[in-house]
Amino acid sequence: KNLDQANSQMQQAVNALQKKKPGNAVPAQQQALAALKQEQTDQKNQLEKELQRLRKERFAAMRKDQEGNRKLTDRITELVRQLGQAGAGASGELIRASGSMSSAGRQLGDQQADMASGDQQRAIRSLRYARDQLKDEEGRLLDQLRGAVKRHVQAALNIMLEKQVAVREST
Figure 1 (cartoon, rainbow, N blue to C red):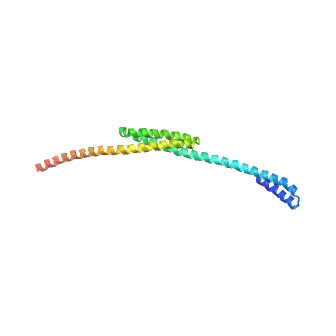
Figure 2: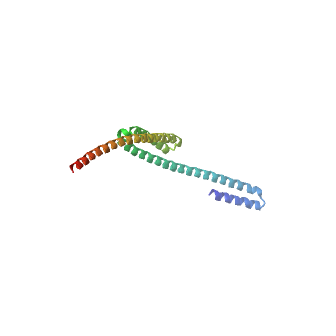
Figure 3: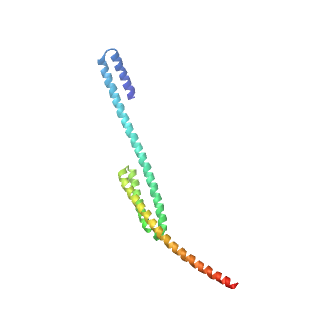
């Protein structure tokens, strides 16, 4: 609409100039300029609305991703709890990470990226610490398991040896 109006006014200005009446062209040029400025304002407003819509979509997607990560962390926390004492240290860190993720999700819903970033960083630190604790615990558990397996195998070998000796002596 504004562009059509500007075009019409510019055509009137051209006609006035062709008739050698420059004074008659000035009002038409001013009206054309006003229509173009209005179009610029309208386009700027439309662009801002579109940017806001895209920003909301982007933050909604980030919040959804954050919530998915938190739910996965909660499932992992439950698995670690099932380890009992072996996962106790990591469990606390995973709970902390989940809390930070929940907070970050709320902040992303409010489009507060800076605040969410801090909570996300805290979640990362907690997850790394929990991972390291589980790695350490894995080593300790494997050492205990190796010792238990070794003792069990030695006991089984002793029993088999005794039985084999008994079979041999009976022949």
